Image 1 (tube, helix red, strand yellow):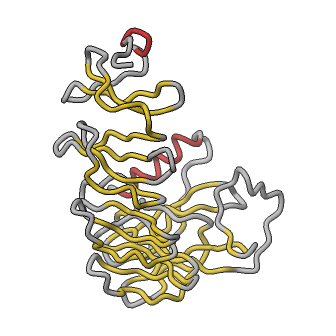
Image 2 (image 1 turned 90 degrees about the horizontal axis):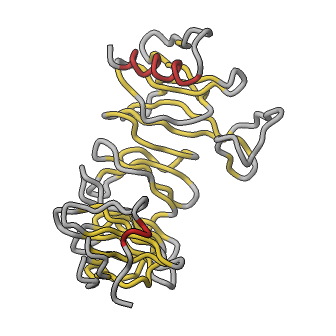
Length: 261
């Protein structure tokens, strides 16, 4: 088969600036041009078109290994990874997993963050949370330790401020592990606080979730007993909730607006 009837896929086809489109056919991903001609055969588990400037495509082969190809179906970065992300716009790095360990590579497949960590977070303000020997800390993009490996989770939320997790003995009533977005380790709840670069505790371990929403010295946190988001002011230590008459979407937008004032 050398051609696809484009009309059959009209609703799901999105052509990029190169006039190519990734589509699924008979359970496999491939790519076509506007004439329906197959330019990448339907042999991939996943294809993610994310980078028109350098024409890279994130691909997962039939053996569930990830790598990067171009629109000529040439392998640019080998299929060596059990997981890979698209290259981030801000840092031009891809998070990858190999032999059960995580790190980050650049477009030349060079390890920028060594593939030696048990888990990693996304990069924020040139920092990322990493897990090693079951404990989390913060490193910079030179793989230098910024925050010690002694937490049950760690992620950068703004410049020199970090959400960190601590395992607690607290039990929750009526908690649905499959639907509620809370974090556990070894069956115990992890709650989250804020620290600065000197590991001073800015907010006690009280939030049931982390958030990357920070501004105006306030961070978005989550109160599980009330099942509501709120803002914590790290200077006044005040908790700010949205007006009760608002619906859930309105409450979130209201709180986010306070981060910008």
